[in-house]
Length: 147
Image (cartoon, rainbow, N blue to C red):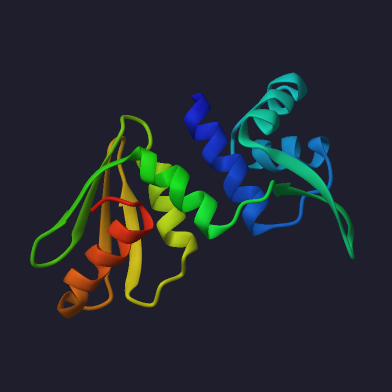
């Protein structure tokens, strides 16, 4: 397991379910076959800007201050190009950054996009309809400041 994969999984877990402690997060990572020490996890959380916040259900981890606008700016720095053909949108990213870009696009839950597939530096975006390819490309370019 490499660091980008671990970071991606940590972000995915925190965004999709409530996590109250590092011990709980270590356990959730182990369930997905990622063994990580408490010290490594602590560093990862700091690097990712993860904070424990108070909720009505108690303390929970949160990607600190992450809004679509902030993520958009961050993701925009990782995107090199956005283009399309007749059936899909292709996003080229910096090496090792495609999974984070794909995760961001998936998190938008845009009804025009069925889903994404990420490699190391390329993301394929599958549209709900090929008739909307140009619109999807435009949306992604706007979100990633790639014009």
